[in-house]
Amino acid sequence: MSAFLSRRSFLRDTGTLLTASALSQRAFGRQPGAGKHAVPTPHALQTPYKLNRLVLEKSPIAGDFDDKFVDCPFVFHHEGGFRMTYIGFDGKGYQTGLATSPDLVNWSRVACILRRQPDSPVFRYNIAMMWIVRENNAMGAGNLKKIHGRYLGAWHAYPNPGMEAGPAVIGLCWSDDLIHWELEQPCLRPDDPDATAWERGGLYKPCLVESDGTFYLFYNAKTVDLPRSEGGGWHEQTGLATSNDLRHWTRSPLNPVIANGPAGSWDDRFASDPCAVLWKNQWAVFYYGLSSRDGKARDLLALGRQPDHLHKTDSILVDAGPPGSVDDDYAHKPSVIAWNGDFYHFYTAVSGKYPNDIRGISVARSRPWA
Image (tube, rainbow, N blue to C red; front, side, top):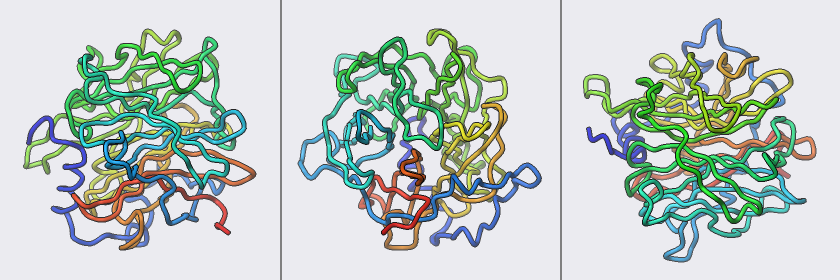
């Protein structure tokens, strides 16, 4: 298989080859293979009530940066309202948008805040900002924090045109107003001297957390392509790098900190797209799993007192829905905040079959919808 096979193609082909039918959480039961290391999912972090519709869809205007689909929500509270950065796809590559909402349900586009740069070898086709440093409390509204007097974001970019094509790199960016951003050069690459086999194929979503003066950069990455005897495609897992100065980064010797589960588990192919917050005295890292058992993607959770000592919980947080629902293929790529005593879990919902699938942003929460 080509080293530049897109992630979307791999997801499509995996789902087609493995099975023609979706399996429900009931069929899976507890996390297969988690065994004695599984921990209960805290009730406060559960969001069983889906809105069951998209809150942000592709632009209806041809030529917009997001006229094919929207993806990868990052939701936060800012200046009395709610904001969401998201990724738009126009058929050529990813760019980054900003939306606003008064109530976490009704969202309006503001602008494309990070556009591709045709003259840049890094940003020629893609620039996907995935995270802005925010307050860490899982039970908070995710108000942004300033670092050195500015807002600090984390992006990743793929070198080739298409959806997530080629070995991506990760970097940082800075802003005074959330609209105009200054991009730094990459700080993590898949070919760094301290990178190991689990990330050699390319880097994906960065999640940047500041705590007590240390910066924790969670990210998922992929292996190089596997031989057909091992199923082809690749594996994705989640790792961690830390820094005290935002210049020098040290990968955890325990990487990947969220590894693939055993065969048949919810995350035996992908353990991806980390969303890290603090819950009580623990790190809570939401992520999504892709299973070779049914080809579905669903959002999961790992907990730990240390950011690189995480234990998966024993239940699915947001599962793929029944046929005909907005997320009947994938419910994945989490972003969480709390508001007025309710816990909200935003995610990318995908329904239908490629190339006619529909990809947009949806939400589930801890309390039933009125």
